[in-house]
Amino acid sequence: MSNITRLVVLGAVRQFEPVHGYFLRRELMTWHVDEWANIQPGSIYNALKSLKQDGYIEEAGTEASGNRPERTTYQTTPLGVVELMRLLRQTLWTVETFDTKPVMALTSFMFLLSRSEVVAALKFRIAEIDAKIASNGFDIADVAKSSTTPAYVREIFELSTVRLRAEQEWAKGLYERVVAGNYVFAGDAGSRVDPT
Image (cartoon, rainbow, N blue to C red; front, side):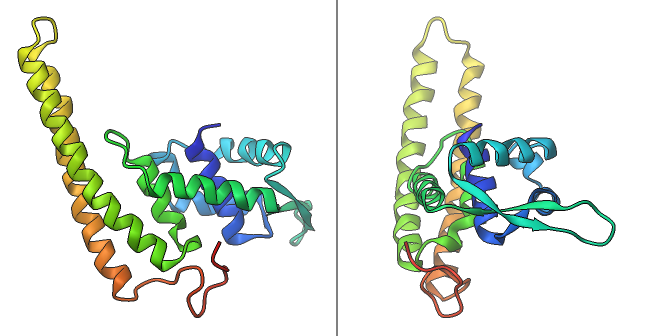
């Protein structure tokens, strides 16, 4: 299971616990995780099984609705909360040059962190993106000097630079919204989550 799948499914269990697999599948499909995280509906059940085997979630009970069969509900274990926070922080503090999945997953679960941590990490991301864009410039120059690399390979780095600039603009806007008090984070009044 990829770290993104682990983060998304574990984070969703934490957000909705106690929760059954069908609810998670239905809810995550409304988030379009099949498109941006490449998590197919059936793999959510496999992820639950794997997370249970790893000790990150446990059965919380069963529930029945109408004539439907009983469904097992899950909740995070203390070990699962530690793993979730590790994955979330790794995603928050790491800028991926070519991959948008981590930042999409981060957005889905940043409410589990404190406002001050999210603000600090967004400031870092904005600066880190400048470094990644500078690095792409050197990669483009290397392609131009190479006698073996096709010249059109530079377009990979050009596209990445444009994507990174868009992410940076989004991060600046999100930073402003978070500083202005938008959204509820761990430790804020009205939060269901204690700061970890």
